[in-house]
Length: 244
Length: 242
Image (cartoon, rainbow over all chains, first blue to last red):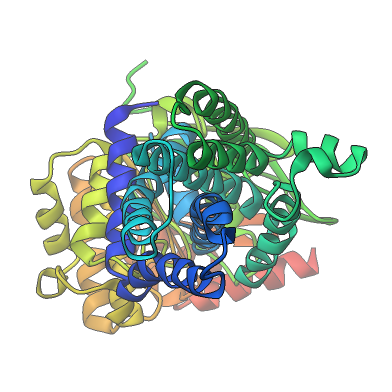
């Protein structure tokens, strides 16, 4: 890997996103609208304080999974990936460039969504707010890493979009948001133990309920980071310089 | 051995199978340095597969391909070989300049090369336009510029002049000869036979087999044909009879 090539790739990806104003607006506005809706539905109940923060972690995960799987699929189908892999650009530069670009984008998304949730919708958070942003960014990069990997199995953009419910929804159902993970049937609890989103949501819950959340959150974020590294390693196996 | 005399590309017994079809059954050929070599033949004849094998992005099933003295696809060749794919492989949501700035960065060439190469493919008036707002011919010239920007020693171009008007085609062939005069080797595919006369040397590929490897003049003399198309048909007839 070469930092100059990674950075050039990240810059190029961000330029592409910047040229698409509608996607950019959707990335920033949709999480706020959904959080606002949730706060409104559950007004005068403690539910919003309970699930608001975990959802701040789920949105970037879902959005970045979708955006990344569609963009990388486009790179494969238009031949730009083939061209790039015939140049000195390394697979690591390509993957890290994407992770960096969408990671940067998710920082902005997380700042806007968290600010909206806390200051507009009155989300009550016991721990430090910056921890929410850190976890949200880790979730976004996780979504990017999984999107890069799963896009290899889609032939069309239509299929790539179908991977979102297939990969994301089971994790959403089992992550402890609908029902606490320790109250799940044993088998499902075991499954939820090996899904990355569970740890992201655990971390978000810890921040909302505990003032001194740092050490617990660090442990969960480290596990999410492990999944990110794993997904990127698997993703790099799907990038072949030689294709049939 | 003097590397200038060594061929730019040596293909020996190259075999490529796709699905259950043998696209290239065992092709052998050489491309001399510093020339514009045309790879001609009908579509579906294996031209793109051969070019992809030379660039090193094709899974091959037998034989060897050596490029500039190294095995095709070697890491050391990646900044020395420029490849223009059949479809314009550039980012349609970026401008011409943004595309070439990125490819220049990937190839590690200085940024002032970007405007220079935009001029070479005659797109200076469109440098700030998004690629998806350009015509098909303009888009394929952006793709050509992306393979030229690193000043490669070997240029592999898959139908670079398809869909271009006659004036532009002439200008591009002039550019190809200028690059060859400066020492580069160009392997250019086309299914348009009248482009044959613009090449220094011709390779005729049909159904995965090399029918001819000759100069345009030599080919016409050997087949007693008036033009390349007639020569090509004569060679096919001779093969069918044999």
